[in-house]
Image 1 (tube, rainbow, N blue to C red):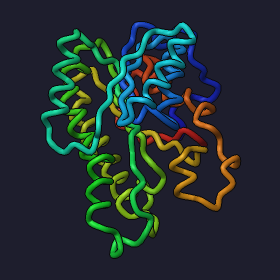
Image 2: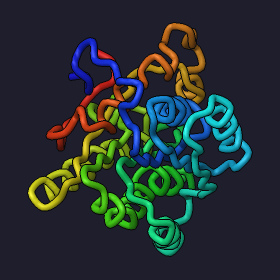
Image 3: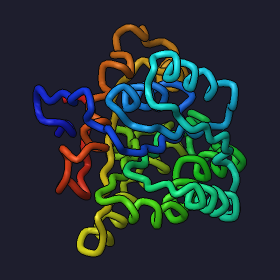
Image 4: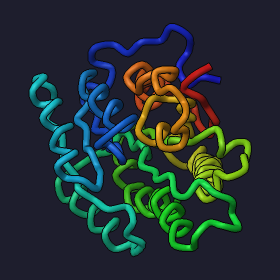
Length: 251
């Protein structure tokens, strides 16, 4: 089931007055969603490892005369909770009320059998793809609670819903992402104004997809920009009441 109803399109001010944090915002889906959120009124906070790549996103948004974004150079490979808590404290000090959090950052890791997967690659994939989601969400829940209605969206994958050989740690991390979404959504369903859902992009023409399928013609798949409305829907109040759902960006 797709996230947005058939034919749904955001209004020009769909996210006006909202603050949305996007991880993995320097490239691919994260970049496209961050820019598109700004185009419908959001103040976006773009988080990624490469400051120069984030500056490119910043320049694109500012040059269009859109709300000035915030840049958060941050390495999700950090396994200590302290940097995540420090980031949340700095945002709280700046009186940020967080209306949306998109967990989009992921690493592919090694495409080989589990028996041949190196422990180092396994640990990196699990850290970035699921442990960092836990640490960042845990730190930011008070800021999400401070908004009148907020949305957490986790970017999933088809191999996190049906396991496939040679997808290794990446597939396992995406199964964990789905489990994290279900547990958190259920915990918050009756105690919070935060809703939590997962969204599988499907085959998209991104750097990660091209790395995973080097023999596939990239133009066979849509660009991220063609699918951004699915994320905007989940981050907007149009999806109020949608919680704990396993959704797809493409039919």
